[in-house]
Image (tube, rainbow, N blue to C red):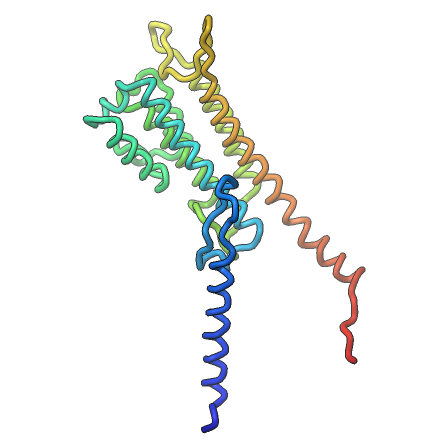
Length: 243
């Protein structure tokens, strides 16, 4: 019995999809230490830049998770202000809100850098650690057009990502320098003293800034590469063999 053309085409599409899924299954990262990502369907709608952005965003949000935990451990009074009964619950809710780009409920209506400013205001009575970290996550996600995963058609401005990196630098400085009326740090973070050196906060901020700066540079470069690649294609064009 003859197979009609539409049926044949449909079968080829099914076989092609099966082949792609099989390839995806073999494409899992071989070294877990490299922190790659398991293959997923949406990766077929991503180019190299989108993959880099997605992984950088994942790692930056992970860094904010760690910063929130460090701040809560050094400043346990902050999570108690929010009404949590234990650190574990406070962290679980905080991590979920970080990934959604949310801000503290009492600061609804304020945006990213506004939340950061309030968090470092000595008069703010709420959970300062959460406000600070949620302000950072909201700001970083806003700089990426509200996205945390990136695909063909998504446009992110290199200048916005670059500005986000500078905002993280400013936030890190504010965290280490802002004091209350009695001269005490608003939030305990890095610690330097006789026999004591805890710079883990500084290192985490440095990682976030480095990822954002690299991403901004690659986004800016990718615009030029479009034209360069086209010219290279003309200069080094090779005819295809016919026999």
